[in-house]
Length: 214
Image (cartoon, rainbow, N blue to C red; front, side, top):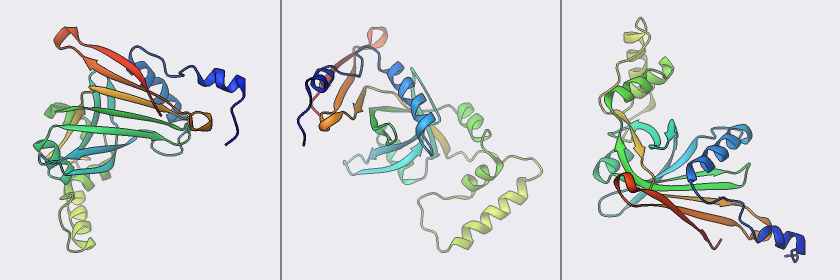
């Protein structure tokens, strides 16, 4: 590995991830990702665990975010849904390869209201509503035709209305961040990491942060 020049060392000596409030940083990075990622800048890995600590991870899509947290939707009878209901905490990971940046987020989960779930479910294309209503997500499927027959039946039943009633088990969850970590690729693998942690309680909460070794 070539030795960094004095100019490079001077740049590397300063973090490019600002201190303070992590949410504006996420907004800036997410906006850049939406411009540069070829597909699904809102794709994120969602890690959950059973009460006895068995982990699992899969990709989901971020469907809303703000000071209150990061929201995604799912079938609550799926594997991730049952794990969430049994252990209401999770971790998220965004990896934007085009930007060479990552964001890790950890915290408890809160279920969205039925009204919020209804609003998002019916904002989806009709064919997506049909597919979700027809799926017993994560459960064994004897053959593809069984699922496709169910899709065809539900589509025919609700085509005139143009929307499908939201299944009661189809809902959303918001991760309320307690920790957010930003990772930024730097030259010579001297990467930049800053971790933000929420401290305090009630109206007295605030973010503290510090750098981490890469």
